Image (cartoon, rainbow, N blue to C red; front, side, top):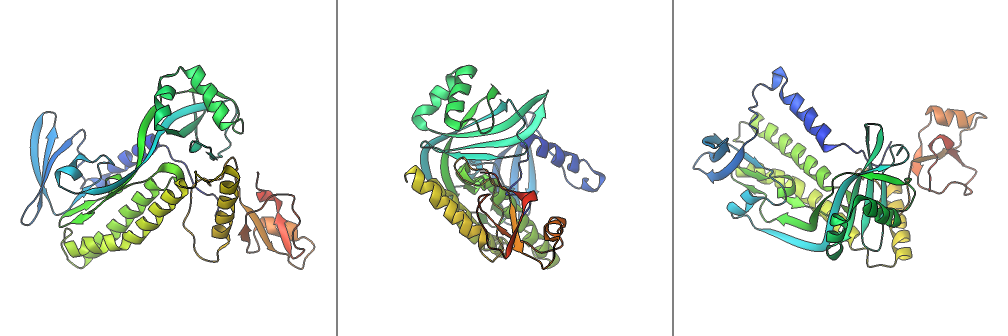
Length: 353
């Protein structure tokens, strides 16, 4: 596991996808933008979609409609798809900030008495270092942080986050949105799939909402490819229900993890920190395949991988360990502690605390 996660800027990802759609082998895809889906109506055999483009209305038919219009989906409401939701009485404040030193590709997540804070590494721009800030704030405090001037905002951010990432010297435009858990009561109908945040919106504490949506997209594509191979209609309810059954357990596990992690905050700081450390240590050492997690929810801790392996019966064991000739089993630990003589520490992957 070379890293706990990777940060990709949404703007860059959008450019890559758009360039892919412009390749010759993607000519079968019609890219309609800007456009607005005004209505979706189920028909006897196909779905009818009404589009609005530059004031003009057009109609198209489709065997299958994949609806992925975000957590505040108006189409979901128009189709009468209910949803369960739970508010966290918090807002997420989003902004790009500039520290006075390089971030070295490190993602930070701090747990505070008000909620988690994440600082994610971004590419430099115009000679300035950049990080993406996700700051969880109680509802009653968000207005003050959104309206205060940049200097005062950076001062409050520094007091709350600390100096592990350096001194914050600049901040971009600030945005905020309320945090809640949303789960659609229906995710499939004949000829219709609800995908992404329209199907499930999570608390950003573990950063898993986007990953869950991507896994759903891949699973849907796999089921549709198999349906086409068997000459079954793409909008067949049996095909779509099989996809939903496949994803249900993943959704329950991921949503439960995010929700339960968020509810750790009423626990006293010391108990919470060591409880999370103990739980994550059990997870990382379990002898089974593990899904990737983003930056560890670890207070002010930054983790890097440390390799510990059985000591070979050779005098140049340290060199051979670094060259990767032996299989290593990964352990999380603090540097400087004593270890069994049977184990050898690979110092090229020393963790920092």
